[in-house]
Image (cartoon, rainbow, N blue to C red; front, top):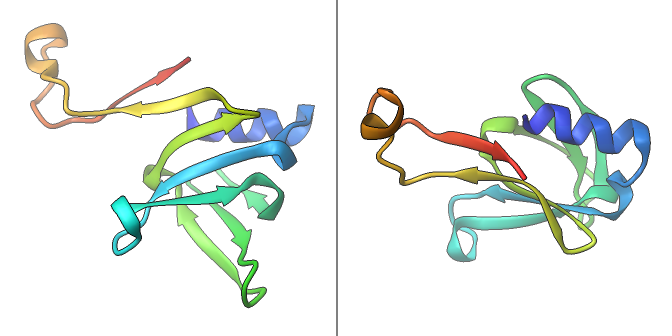
Length: 100
């Protein structure tokens, strides 16, 4: 669902105005905010963004995306810490995603 959300924003407009929050070890709270206007490429399993500080492109796997917002509204969020075993029969510890 991350790919579909980013791809829809890219082609229908809104990618420039969105914010992508990723899991980034070492950042405050292990989270980093990436402005959508810095995204240069979106593929099925990753995206690239251009770093504002040094202009380098950085590769981000989509499994690191925690949330996608557009003008403050949450479009997509990764749900975690659920005991899915009792609800769906899935193994404990799996990460479930939901499109909001």
